[in-house]
Image (cartoon, rainbow, N blue to C red; front, side, top):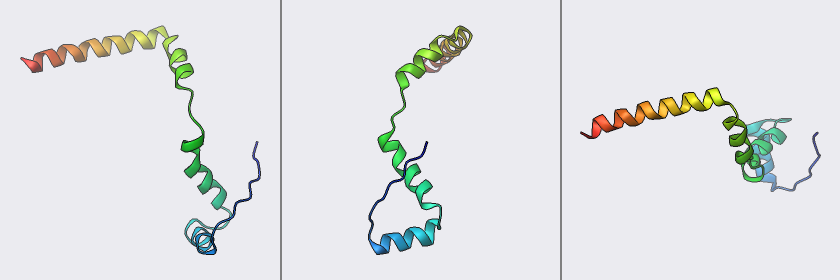
Length: 76
């Protein structure tokens, strides 16, 4: 669902947005610019969900063990 938001900007900023971003594209531009600062992903839940996939976890463990062994050889 979308919500309408009214913001006030300087005329110069508005003209720049209109010229550079284009009319009817400013809302998307502002949303994409602001999103990382106000919407935080729920990493804890995402990692817990990934950990339930035993096949993926086993493949990741196997990959990690192979790479650790390779690093041991490089250190010698």
